[in-house]
Image (tube, rainbow, N blue to C red; front, side, top):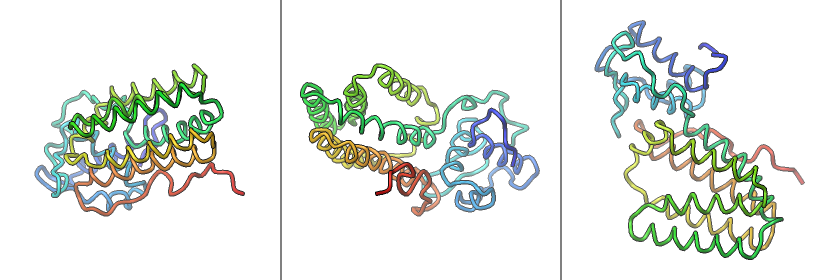
Length: 250
């Protein structure tokens, strides 16, 4: 599989699948091999294959059918020359970046947080609870809560870095396509409980607990999205980390 110098890793996976299509391994209408099999054949993670499939779906090469699998719509020679996802960041890659950054931001925030910061976070969680109750999703309050944690570091550079990550998510065609596969949003109630655990750690000013709670929250997000967007079967690979590889051992 090619190792493109400036390409994102999922683009290499997508290119490998395109080459299989061009070489006649699949015909129009064929069902692609399950993601697990493709990941084993290419020696890459399951989430990279998921991101590659999302890219090919956006390009109109494949049709993703929930509970059935992924089917060839047309071959690369018949596909449009434009690649709308080519500059996008894969949703699981973005989550990994957030996991690395936000867990440490939360730890630092625990040392700097003020009473006013805590009150703002409490209000954000109440807003999130109301949004979940009225069916509006809770996304606005979710973003607000995470941004308030960054603001609690009292470091404007960290706040700007966090804002950029959220903007990348909002602009991401791949992120939107991933969410189009998910119809049951009950999982967001679990994330509200995660947020409460993070807030508790910040309230008691415990950096290690805050880091751990944020890390676990974003790991829960990653695992849930990977499972709910699975079109092949309910079993899936852990990808980012089973545990925090940067944790300091006692």
